[in-house]
Length: 495
Image (cartoon, rainbow, N blue to C red; front, top):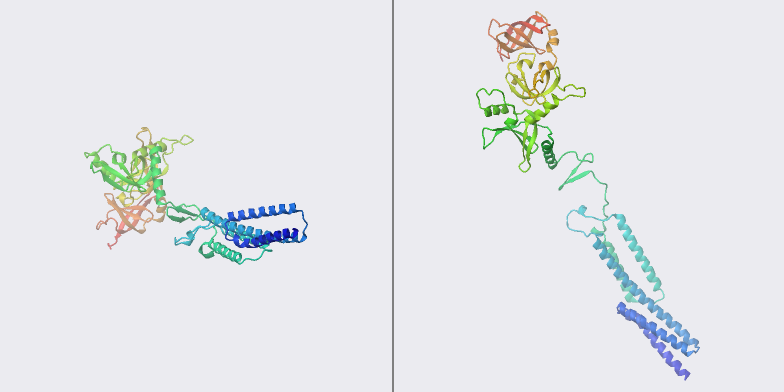
């Protein structure tokens, strides 16, 4: 009876041993859930076997040896199952990590944009660190797998699966770098370039000084707005005189401030004279405005239309503001800023034959021909023009009427008197060459070198025309009155 029981137990053990040997091949086709269920069933069977062994209470050394061998085989099969499950979970983890990296934008695929420099790549340091960590983790996993399967029987299907996994990992590591593993460019230093719209401007000192067209237009508009709101005085050149289409009797002065057109009505650009001499006021103002073409004037903006690029202004308001500051204002000591014997800079606004009109800090002053030069001139337009800046000497200032200040000025007295120096060049009885500057009832004036004139009587022959070259013999010099006179001895033939 005891022998029969032993035989039955030995047959059961043999059947279990065959089942255990077939498990590695079956687990390859099972899903993870089925493998878990199989492992649980095996553990239950082992528990049952242990219970039966305890209840028998029999000591059989040969059977225990066989049981130890079976347990070793079973443990090796279980290890193979765990290794397979770890490899599958690792593959799933790698796929999930790659999908998350692609979603986070760490790995940018290569596009057909044309310019490879426009693509954005991560820094090389981060790339090398990522690759090294992947390689290290993969090598650690392979070492653990080799250790776990050292005692197990090698399986050809498992070897083929590992080889396919290594090939797939190599392809993934190559695909991480766009352009076939090309090195990615590092982010360089910040350049001193300024991006303006679609173009890029390289600055010399790191900060752009030159203005673009948009910045110039913006600054021009800000200048006009500041002049309108704060009363800031702007300066411009009268570049045109227009008449309104709806009212031809009204004239407008045109000044350009950048892209903006500044219009100043004639009654706001020039001061009307006291006597129109029988002419229409609008015609007189139009003529006065025309003679000021090219003049540099001040103005204050009164209105702006940014849509049309036109602004209205007043010159007379700017002149009143300057008169109040320079003629009625005082310094810290209580002295006026403009006073007699002061030399100042003035702007020529109009030129006529008999003299010039200058803008002297908000006040138009007329300077006659005799105060323009120590020489005898016939036409001031030959020597001056509108828009010119000159030095003048203030001869007198009348502030008795604060609303009507009167000033006299001289151009020639602002400089050095040439007679004091030039008269030393000439001596009585000698002959010198000069040019006829003027002919009047007093005689012929000959301009000599040094900016002085020699008054000569009419020659016995033909009277020389103005501008002709003549020879003069000096008859007398008066240093006190700065006078020199002589006689014409020869007239050069005209060329």
